[in-house]
Image: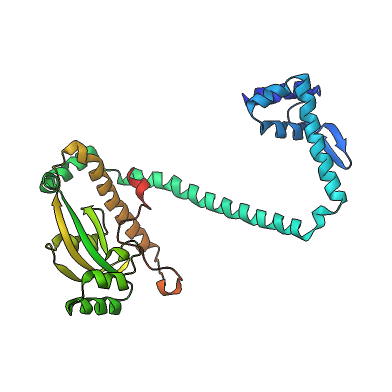
Length: 297
């Protein structure tokens, strides 16, 4: 449709040349307005306006608007606006921002394209999903949601000091409010949940699930730091039939496979990280992130 409209515009201008012609339509000082420039401008316009340009009045208005713009540009150059420092700096900043956005787009497109390739290698079949459901039938017949309090710090010595305070009689709630670096829960005495199996990082979840109500863990290390966990409650949920559980199981299988792929690549690429060199804020929590969510969708 756009090509047809552009062709129509050329006919309207009465230039009788091919699309993209360098034939000059108007001159404004040292600026020449070519047929190709008009086509480029018209292509950026809404279809309704392109139709309007296909009329005598529309053609004249369109060309006049381009000429008026060129007059202002020429006048600005004559006044030396393009030589001003603020103009040059603004152009430089804009160029840098465009380069940054292009770099981000290029990286994002590369990741998105490759994620599709990875998904083909880790996709879980219906038979695999059913086998998982059958092997974990009890978990789906009597699913459990658990609520806990936790304290998160980034240094083991801090974790040991917090644990000692609780063991000496201070309340978990009080210590969590004072020392926990999980910004989302510290003001609530470290309270988080309820969670179902598979929603927290594995090291944290394994300990939390095995705690009894009102029981406290020792120090638990995860990728976020060092935790102390206190079990608040367990809640038995209604049974989950296979069809309802199927999407969740599929995501879980594919997530596990992706994590294995990720670990293998980390090893093969010899990844080394100096976390102490990064000036980052404290971790925000223990929930699994959604960075790889596209893998399982």
